[in-house]
Image (cartoon, rainbow, N blue to C red):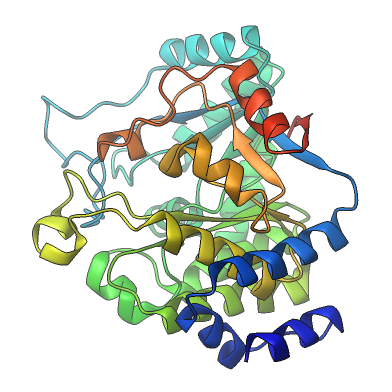
Length: 354
């Protein structure tokens, strides 16, 4: 069965959900990886692996969504744990990023009801008037929330945020774009259609965005495939996604793992590499597939470069959400270590700036 799928891949014929399910059910990891590597090399003929120096700044941890898989958020009114960064604190983090050679900040946070659209506009203007930095900001979930709070359409919110300085939108909050799954792990979160709708509007306005997939919790293989397919379908229309980033649920300190005994262990490296490779095969119209060394560590990320990935992600000067779930792979890594990891995997590190 895999040989028939590989024939389709070699003939540039799009594989469907039935093919994807066969791949997920197969334990022939090396063949699946070889297929993904074939596609990766066909799309990216040079042995380059890109990376970026940026910082993931979480401007607030106050969140009303209370996702069961999240160990980072604080409840409204939790004065001991909650925070919202001041412009002075934000500026210090941005300057440190620039001093370390960073070119972008990834600005995301919780759904804080005390922060209105004017807060984001003022914050973005402060950033852009004081620092030369690319602003990759606000997941679709945050934009949907801001629109609800302000009584505006998401398109109008996006236009105002762009006018204030937003350069692109990260793909956070996607989790699994199947509402039956979202209802189980994050019932207060925006729907799949709302997430996709924000991305559609952003692409129509000329913004580039990324797409993520958090897997390894309550979803099925069919759910993962549905997620890939709806992203692929939107990309067919808009061509606005620049990267697809699958990463694994990190269970420590989360309500979701506490309530499901079988979720207390992390998804295996085998499952990660298979899903990464299938992402390259299924999401055939997005140029870059990114490894998640933050959740997998450098060694598995290196292997991922032979399983369809072409981007190593970020040096990530700061990260809070995954680390809150007990994952510390990023701690202490230097730019030279990232470059050496890429080189020792047989590729050439190339720094990107957005």
